[in-house]
Image (cartoon, one colour):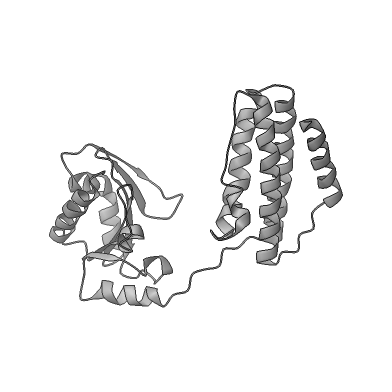
Length: 258
């Protein structure tokens, strides 16, 4: 739908012609051959050493535009996600994450399935085999991290809830957004897809109807507490909630709902 295959074809032509590129492969959904019309492209470009990578990195913007020279594009550094990551949005709809690596790249479980566009003396095949033997890391969260998350959740949650109850839909909105940002991503990161408590977190609702929003907030609190319990259980954390306080808060919220 967004012409990803066209980008792949042009990318392969480009890296094959580029002597400085030792290896290039696709990871992610294209590596697993499970892509669909909306999948982005996870591209790894490998260089012989750090000096070669630095030289290529300096020209990264020109390179990504040269892949499809007649398709307008914008690109952005994403080193906050990982070093030497450059993301490009092509105006044909394709999104491409370019990873600039070296041949010293250690095996990792996310590259166990790759689609090789360019290889160097069988390096990519050997690398893929090594990745297949690498175990997935276990997501972690410490008790201290959970406690900090919990404290921030309660402060922001109650700010939003009490303001919504008084009919204010404007002032609490930004706090609600921060509440979601602070609490949901860390919990979702450590809860696997098959965990039932995870599903309750996958909802967000903020409406001009403050009564409806208040109802959602009660559901959000229940989902948060269930997810927190699941995290404690799965990670065997020494975390003791203030049950008396939380029960009273939920009782109060049920009273206000009537």
